[in-house]
Image (cartoon, rainbow, N blue to C red; front, top):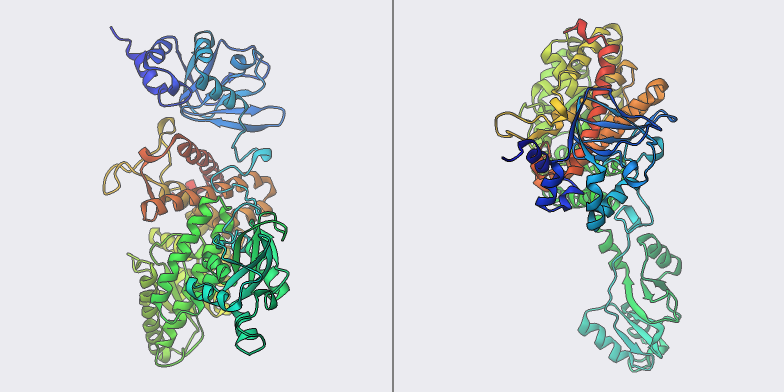
Length: 637
């Protein structure tokens, strides 16, 4: 009769290396020798210097932290499918780390004696164990190993990058050359037939000079030299040469310094080796096609929203390139947000041109929600508002009517370039969100003084606003009013904290992902609601408790909090890392799925991706614990 338990163990182990490299028979044989170990939360598996166990471990359910007790820090966090406790197998020594469960955990204990034969007979198994034994931690709490989460991979500016003008320039590898004794007429005919603007002049197979269409205009068309003269009489010499690995900045600097429009690229960068390419100013402009500065100029010159829509594709291509090259998420977000802001400003300007008259009073266009936080990297729906200067009561309807018409042009334009209309109609084209400074003061005061469910929900969206266009003083005055009101009614922060704790947990029993139980996204994981929003909501209430209104970005809020509260700096920095990691993960998923990236099909994720997600969940739990204690949430529930 088949051993059902060992069969289940084999079925689990075959999904993870190194066991995935074993044959079915080998795996079933080994599984019969495996022991099942149950540990409660905060239980020791082994201590530092403890005598080696006769087995190593695989996490079946739960999580085990590996601690360096002398440094009081977690060096690694082992999740489902992870192996640990390899020292007695690899080095036959006592343990140098402490293994302790982070939660209720089930382990599979693999007997070393029974596993040794597979190491000797299977090179892939042996290699995996050696690499695992020597691998570095990716734990954000470990100061010596920070920077390895999804959102914090170090960027090497010398790498082949598309970041600004550090990128390598594309050049023509088809070098058209002529001998220095060729006639100018023959060279002109070659340039015409091949549709090129320059010809390399060689002597003995090496670059000796260059003739461009500018030379033909200035030296031949003017009659300075006859058409049958030799190339060497009008060529520019010596040529300026560079190696093939050339950045846009280097190319631009060389052309400006020497007042030339072409560079010759040679094997070693000198005139003493063969030419392998030619670079023109036109090539540089083509290379700059996905450069943020070029995109900004193009957007600002747009004559209509359709032109902006076309350029937005370039912004998305830029985003894909940054993600592919692991550009830090904070920098990626800043660049894409700046480009999005330029698009919004241009839409507002084009909308103003459609109005019959100038605005009657000062106004500001506010971006809210993810765009207000500088976290809207993908094309999602609009959340915006229009704030205008106070007017006499008898002028209000007329003034609001003007701005409602303007707002409809703006929201329609934003929709054209890729921002969907807000399903809840939280847009400046709605009279509720097209109001005077006094009107918004009255509205926000009501939210703070009488924080019901609807008022808190509106606060979580509106209080993340940023000025996208218009008058700074109006926005400053509104922000100051909100902070002053919260100071008078601090109980509002407790209600806001309670809302931050209302988001469903990312995981359930044994840290399994909690997925949607019904509806369109049944069995999918809601990355926004279960992972990102708890961090966003926590950052908002904490930063408001310090009366800070000029920072709306979530990870920047946490970084500011780390400065304001040094005793909690570790958890705030961890939250900052986690937020960037999750946003990068969501953006990648959204680009792959061509949607907002909110709902994740877990079956399409690899083990490493699932582990990276789960590592952020511990941080979410800790920051929610801090909120619960600080704001005494239980008293408002």
